[in-house]
Length: 129
Image 1: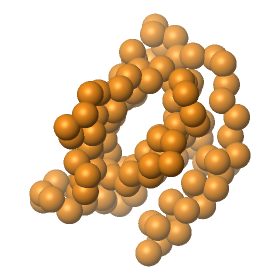
Image 2 (image 1 turned 120 degrees about the vertical axis):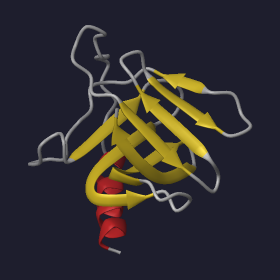
Image 3 (image 1 turned 90 degrees about the horizontal axis):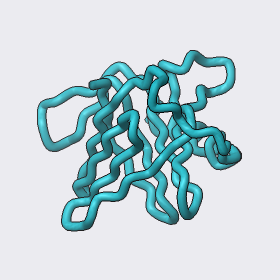
């Protein structure tokens, strides 16, 4: 419940963000993540080249993104908000937690994740690569 309330608060903050037109420079240090979720099964890979989204049974989508924003007054490692460039206001939010379970395996992850693409909101877990 505590994580749900935190996620809802983060969604409210993220909904008010404006997309910056400054893209990630490929030469800058980028922390890479693997994000997974189920019902439906989906995954995301955060790389220097972009954010790669894959929903099972559909073609993968690659989004360029701006440098992740931290929550106000928090270090970047606590909350990261990625604003994906392209059509719509697509957002990936990674929130550091004690542990996140994908509910399908015994794997534990150190981040919870919310991915918003258009009217679709997906919830999952993430880990640094």
